[in-house]
Amino acid sequence: MPKCPNCQKEVYFAEKVTSLGKDWHRPCLKCEKCKKTLSAGSHAEHEGKPYCHNPCYAAQFGPKGFGRGGTESHSYK
Image 1 (tube, rainbow, N blue to C red):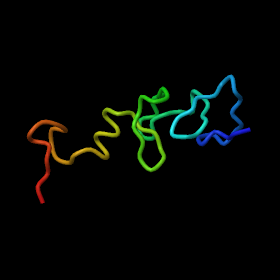
Image 2 (cartoon, rainbow, N blue to C red; image 1 turned 60 degrees about the horizontal axis):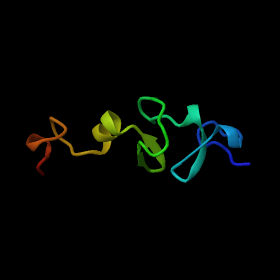
Image 3 (cartoon, one colour; image 1 turned 90 degrees about the vertical axis):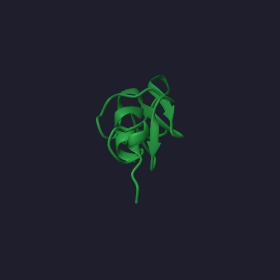
Image 4 (cartoon, one colour; image 1 turned 30 degrees about the vertical axis):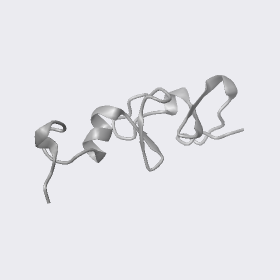
């Protein structure tokens, strides 16, 4: 029986959601930052952890700078 990566308890077939190559309990598949419940396939991943696309993944791992999008979002080095 597979174990949920979040709570480490066994995941039974009736409650299973598969995402990121692992089996999760539906309420355990949450954004690592804001804890919003995610649905399988509609989220981003960074280092094996799920994140909601916007704003969490974009803010943490997207382009740096102000504006988060558009012409002003690029940071020059």
